Length: 232
Length: 219
Figure 1 (cartoon, rainbow over the protein chains, first blue to last red):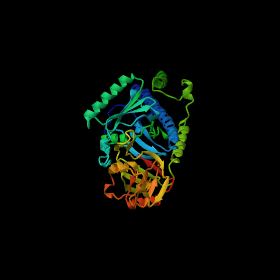
Figure 2 (figure 1 turned 30 degrees about the vertical axis):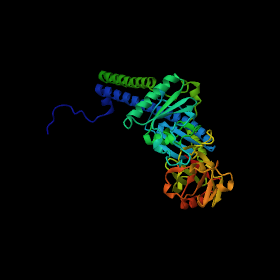
Figure 3 (figure 1 turned 30 degrees about the horizontal axis):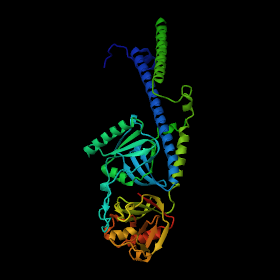
Figure 4 (figure 1 turned 135 degrees about the vertical axis):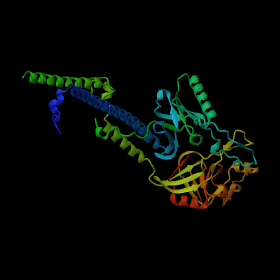
């Protein structure tokens, strides 16, 4: 192999790289890019930490309320839309669980706090006549409504409806009822709309009682933002 | 010599430009990025008082533990009136899963006294076993005679009926009981006047596991 006549560029060395304009530009861009990535990553982590802090604050508030509720002989409902759960509980023990398929609230912020149910959903109870077995035509779970509103105190309307694809008519009725309620209350009452399966909606209507406490808020925590950033 | 000096100058310029660009990028990204909480000077006073994550987590663990301590330590009874099931549980362990019969939810009006009405619901809520009777007798209330279409007896002794409530009856207030039944084919249905019916075997199991004071949760 003969020589080409061009000088051999030799192995790459730092002075050579620095002397090349293209290399300098590339290095500058790379450093800038790395720095932007690092700062953006740190800020994303910071946002996660803030979100976790908010979640912890809310969960702790809900837990404090629940400890007070569990100390009394009563059943209560925990509404955790963040995890799509309705938990019927007593003495801190979960006795029944229903799944929330979807939810809506003003500005996508569900209310947080302790509420009380003012009235159960209305049910048509069969009447027996004297001389007739009153238990012959009982009310069953299937007789409960799948679309209804629960009015809570302080002012909050909990609207329950099945998904549109399952029961378009009931879904539409729920929508109309929600609009009407908000129009009548003129914004004085907050609202939370929960989409439940028809079975879950009926089960909820069956289980709630007048005066039952409804504890709305997060009960479980999201994934930890970053275990290395445990304290600040 | 001149070439070497020129190259050194260019190198120094390049290094300085590189450093400045990197610094400017960092400052820009930091200034116009998302929210941050690191520096306390720019935060309002309220935010600075926020407890640390570790403190919040410790508080959460302590509260969770406090709530767990509220759960009954001994067996407790859960009755699902929608599905007509009775469970005896200890913590998360199910000790008994029994088919029951609970209230029908129907209404009976008193034809003699229009203001009087009975609603045959099993009460929902948290209760406790208040009494335990062995070989209980049923003292028939007024509605039982109205249902049968017979006159309400003046003599209290005529109200007593034996052998229909099973071996045991567990009272949980206001005349409501968990008891046995002769109509076992109706178990699993909402057919009672508010009491909770079980078959003989499950009733014996409840007698073995429950006592006066045992928590009873009905939903």
